[in-house]
Image 1 (cartoon, rainbow, N blue to C red):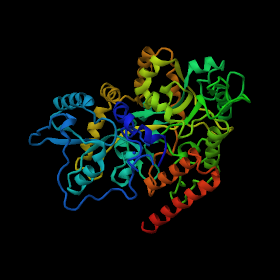
Image 2: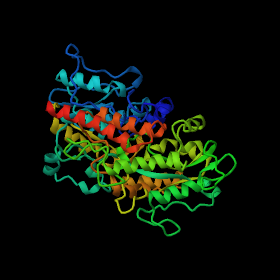
Image 3: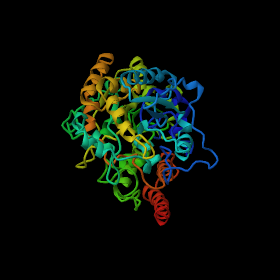
Length: 511
């Protein structure tokens, strides 16, 4: 598909390794998917788990350049727990010393269990994990892994509820709605919260000042400075004042030249996402594009239509949001829209943390609350990483014991710092806020923690049949509007919906 994310692929190969979300945000859609990648968005198979080539039963080995922690020799009576790293962040050479430190400290403090990290390049994760399953050599833990990664082998993970209940594990330690993200009505609890990446509205304070426009509110549910509710309509209104052409006219001016824009007031929603991710903000639907029972396509339902209409108007009528052709200038200037200094507001997840230092050198910036759409609930589209234990693991009980040790705050902090994410543990989240506030004193990092009370559930990356193909259909629909190829939003979404329904019918006919 021809969209902004293709421009980003090369620019984010490095940046993605610094993030730490669902997938190394570095490769948007796997060449039809960094971290949290387009996050079509994540490469997810239609019928998990995948079957590997019948003749390939070798154990996957990490690439030499990974500089993985050394292999571990176990003594008689000891159990080795293999931790598969490859479904998201954690594969870069710079991250391996922390893995080795944790591996060494665990092994030195345990006589019955030893852990060993297996580092696999992200692009090889499907083949290598499938091969291990086929060869009866499944790893015991997969981490970090996002919701999209869980969907890639949706039927392969155990429900942790019995372990949690048996140990009376304290789930109240986790912030906001993060415990719900890894809960599935048909699967139970597949993982404990680890890393979270809520969406916020980043804004360029300098551009607001230049336009003499009040900043957006930082508290969720708070009204705008003029007393109006903080809605997408209000966001569009102030974005028009920030949007400026080459002659200094804003988008409200009769003399405004939409063919020669120099500053855009808004660059829309997270570049990795399908329209479904944000349709849920426009009405009571989930963002996966399918119904809760996963049998009916909902891509042409009213919330999806309203979200797409907003996008169409913002790009082609109000001219506050760059179309796909115009957006190229952002990447001539920087690695992301906000970094170009040409965007007033951008709604995107906190995995943009890798870009903060560059932004800070170029302009003043801050973070604000997500707007509402009238009376519909506010939603912060949230990415999240966790761990999972494969059903094929021969050491599930021992794997749970390893996780409990890893989830002690001192080690959880090591991991979340290593993965550059917001810790889901309440105490560590407060420490994260304090550390970032010290580095970037002009930024209100409480906004990110508050956003976790508004995380989407079901999560926008949750499994559905024909995962990648349905996401592709939604992306093609979005691109048709973003590129100006078809402005009939309902017709575009009807076409996408028909394609998705056909895929669903084909799937359920054989299941």
